[in-house]
Amino acid sequence: MQTKNNLNKTLTKINRLIKDQKDKLQYAIKQEKSIKYPNMIEPNHTELAAWREKLINIYAEAILLDKQESVVLLNNWGRETADLLVAIQIPLDLAIKEIRFYRDQIGSIIKEAAKSDNLSLDGFYELLSSLDHAVDHAIHLVSVFYMKNYSTNIQSAKDALDELSVPIVNVSEKIGVLPLIGDLDTQRAQILMDVALTQSAESGYEYLIIDLSGVPVIDTMVANQIFKVLDALKMLGVETKLSGIRPEIAQTMISLGLDFKDTKSFSSLHLALKSIGFEQKEIL
Image (cartoon, rainbow, N blue to C red; front, side, top):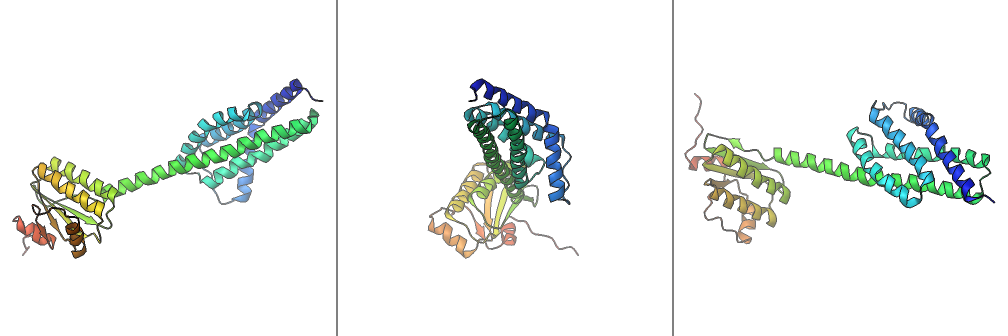
């Protein structure tokens, strides 16, 4: 019967063998990728090589640790890995395949060491269980953190696009026009408020025309947000006018009981500009 001391010696031996063969393991994954994906050009990042080496070391350490300790070790690694994979644009499915790839390779190392040391069936099972747990948890963590990171990047890009989609056009030194196009949701309406207030204050507008002719529909939340924008601009001393309000949008605002009596509205941007004495001169 194998003693605990003998088992620990085998664990230490396997840990060392895995680390000693890290270059061989990294080469094996590159070879497999070149065969399965011959047209794929892998990014030549030193970070990617360091990531592979760290993953192999973690698998080696997981052999010596209990499952709870390996979870703690993997948690920090998973977050760092997700950041790296997104940064160097490695698809999640390829990353998962690589994380899983080492299961068989390291499993072979464990098998040979178990044979050499006459490891008991129970001891062999315990080793494979530790490795499987580490691999499964690594895949889970990378997937979770990768998707969180990816979603954050998508949201940041959407926010940047939303900001670009609410530009204020300088018609003259004292007049600005905010043309809105497309669907308005609550988030974009909040950006509208921020942009309108900031740029109106910075530019010193006396008049700001919010043109809604390109907006197909406005819901209750957005209508309330527009009302807040108008109220805030009034406090800044900016006279605001609405133009291009569609009948259904007007009905929404009326049904909400929003008081727009202090804000003049016009059927077109041209009429709104004309009301404040701005008319485009014809070029002869």
